[in-house]
Length: 79
Image (cartoon, rainbow, N blue to C red; front, top):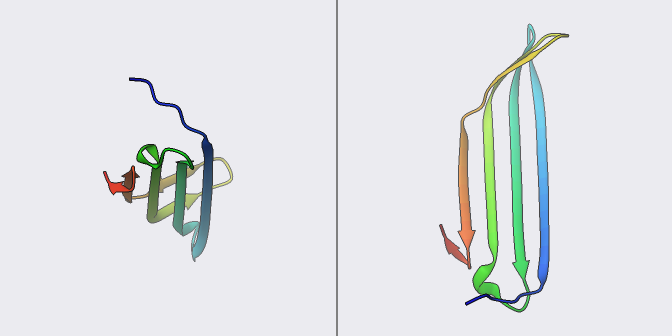
């Protein structure tokens, strides 16, 4: 059966490159996305991805190797 709910969707992204020298950088990124329903929490959905790796930059291009950890919660439970 279809469900009705009222809520809010949100997102937050953070990123920072730390210069290691010779065009190499330590790269950090975090992304958070979510939907929260104040009248139907069984359908709340939160997703987070954190990346940490190395980045090589020139004036024309950027090359990144960023392994990541990802976690999701749905309805308050780990998914």
